[in-house]
Length: 227
Image (cartoon, rainbow, N blue to C red; front, side, top):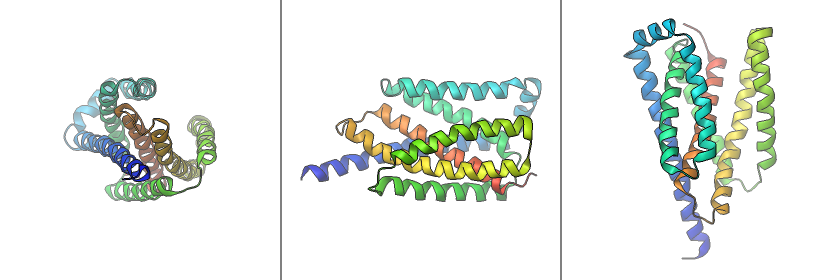
């Protein structure tokens, strides 16, 4: 077996490992969201009513986890896996609060659209021979501007059309980031000499998880019809 074949086999295993962690994360979030919406909905609503800042506390905890995983994941695989599981649980709670505002039909349409977009852009990132670094860096730069626009619209403009435009731009930006992140997996595999650790796999799974969730949320806002 020549070196090229061995490298391809190893790379495919690395992709499979990352996507297994990704599926685990999405599955955990889906289960938690279902439980919050259908089993513990009254308890959660009463808790948030009594402690409204708890919801923001969960958001902050998610941000802290992303930062910690970015710094520690590659050196500590156990911390990476447990942190990713905790992040998926917390995000399942915040997602449930968001999903409660939309009809089931809207949620299904948004999920299918996000899955199709994510899948298509992932395939492009995996198989294209073109270097997507410039596009990826541009997309991340555009994301910073988009985040600023989101806050301006939320607290100052409060415009429905602007919110709709932001959602469309979010789909475009995260579609590009999805392709870039999938190509980056190949780059990391090469940089580690074909010996990437579990921590790297978990960290990249987190990146793809964030790509998918943000696509899903953007499509929710595009197709959204509040109950």
